[in-house]
Amino acid sequence: MSEHHILLGLGGIGAAALFCQWLAWRLRLPAILFLLLAGILAGPATGLLDPQALFGPLLFPLISLSVALILFEGSLTLHFSEWREIGTVVRRMVTVGALITWAVIAVATHWLLGFSWELSLLFGTLTLVTGPTVIVPMLRVVRPRSSIANILRWEGIVIDPIGALLAVVVFSFIVSRDDGGWSASLSTFAAVIACGTALGAAGGWLFGLVLRRHWLPEYLQNLAALAAVLGVFIGANLLVHESGLLAVTVMGMGLANIRGVDVRQILHFKENLSVLLISGLFILLAARLDFAALVAMGPATLLLLAVIQFVARPLNVAVSTLGSSLNWRERALLAWIAPRGIVAAAVSAIFSLRLMEAGHEQAQLLVPLTFLVIIGTVVLQSATSRPLARLLNVAEPAPSGFLIIGANPVAREVGKALQNLDIRVLLTDSSWENIRAARMENLPTYFGNPTSQHAEAHLDLVGLGHLLALSPSSELNALACMHFRHDFSAQRRFTLPSGNESRRSDKHRTSDTVRGRPLGNQALTYPQFASYLSKGADVRTTTLTATFGWSEYQALHGDRATLLLALDPRGWTHLAGQPLDFTPEKDWTLVSLIETEAQPGVTADRTLVQTH
Image 1 (tube, rainbow, N blue to C red):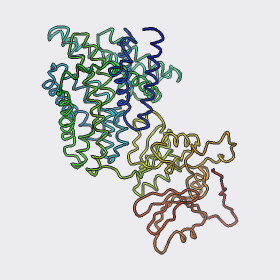
Image 2 (image 1 turned 90 degrees about the horizontal axis):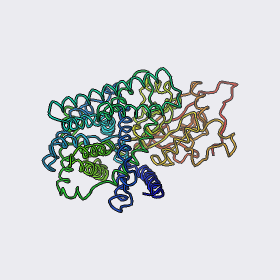
Image 3 (image 1 turned 45 degrees about the horizontal axis):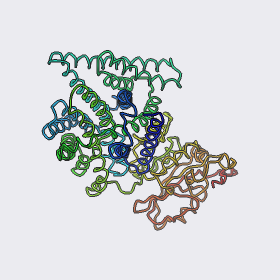
């Protein structure tokens, strides 16, 4: 292949990957679906992309290193300290339930497709993993009750590294059996487990020590992490064949659980790198699919997909939710939603190539069969989960909760007032002091940047229909309003302007199309709000009656009351802007900032601020 064709191929993969990721973000669907379809169109359908001809002998090493980095990034998210917080149902789903799913899929694969027991067990481990990259976009569309959404989201996060670790162990056992009799295979298997665990734990501990002692400047930590992962992977494989994937998985789990080591920066870098690797990797793998071999297996593949959807998952949920407070409707939706994702596709590719080299002819079917399960579960569940949730009456109504940018005193006061009205709130902040203060006041929080890649997978927006950008940073407020513009309409994004916004020239002032609408029926800035709170003002809730209506409310408080929002008897939330586009009536509940009465001889310090 000429240099010209190689450059065209690489450029085409990059352009297709970017378009697929953008389309998934725009439609709020799992990106894996569009990436696989792009690969199928470029490869088997049209013949435009031939990965083997494009990369030659580099294809296999590139896939191996990519899978190693993906597994390391996934294992970095498993914190043992969170094990007690995820709930009994999730713990059962990722332990006993996962074993049940594994057993059902393995038996079905063996009897329906005639796979050997070794490959059937391996396929079972590959297809029991869901993952946050497919669960989170689906939850945003389905919008189930928070109890269901939290279980599915935590299952996807926790099962990712556990499933990968289990798949690596089974694969290591298959490879060890190829080296001789039972005694030789057991010794080889033990060597793989021992080497992978020891080298991974040592690598994680040593790199954690480097980070904790600050032996590296911050700008080199990401590069060092990448080099360390590749070094552990290659070193483990050189010591004991096929122990590298286990080593990097253990390394990530160990590094994530070392006290005093902050891996957030590394995790963000690895997440961005994983997006790049996954996008290109899935297109390449889909372009290599052998549909002729899959079609030759006949309708048994569809029967296997039906067993995974209608037998394995319901059994998992039935056992895991035994004795829980979930009703049968909630359990039914849990039993329906389990799309397969990244780990299944990525790991199946490397295992298939390895086993084909070792002489396992059926191994060539692992990748197309895994992709069939991924496409089948994602397409079927994406199309039917929302109507099913409505039919079962477990879907959230039109989202009415609030995502609040900031956990500062202003945000906390507004959040407490909303929570007292049984309105769901979620406060986000990168300041641990603010987050700790919010948690002390029993306010739900997300510790981190709400526009980060980590938030894309972990920020739970189910039930949230409004955005309040209440950070003292006007730049962060504007960024948040832009970042979530497809999640919250322009009429549901509000902010408090900064004090100096009106004094800035046009070239330094954030565009009105980017900022949210100013919050309050009177001109109010964040510094003013914070100042009033420090002087004794409070955010007060008042319900109007037949004898105390909106006019009486205004007469009582005058300019000292800045209306923030109102809740009507139907439960609809109306945020106050300038001018006020609604008139509160009887039985409406008002939430306002009420300033303290000015002392005699002291003038109020309210200054009108031009916000548009």
